[in-house]
Image (cartoon, rainbow, N blue to C red; front, side, top):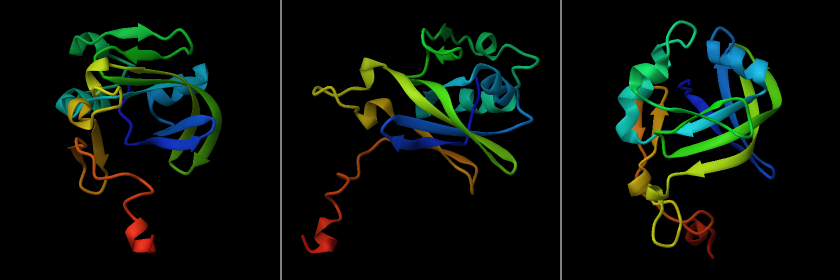
Length: 162
């Protein structure tokens, strides 16, 4: 289990996400060895635990046990799913890029696990219920992302004159 500041969506077809890690980390070695990772997206209320995960190393401690969290074995990749977080993406590594201090691992998403408590009545993600957390590198702050601002490819039409 790792905390990664540099992660995100990088392709829509096939659906891929990326995570960038320093080679010195234990997680880096695990991804290289297994050619797989899971991207587990926590709620903002889990920020303290996520911060701990980023400061502690799996080389010398069992972070799952210390937090009382549960590692679920993925059926698709050799990487754990964190039962206590609402969103998990199971990914196989399809590309690796060396970018100076970090290695960027691009993973094709093979499966998505989402806690149904994060969905609205129409079955769409409700950001207020999910309240995913993010990270602002410049200020080193964790943030909650719990509201919809508007529809992509719609909000800017007025400025285009449409």
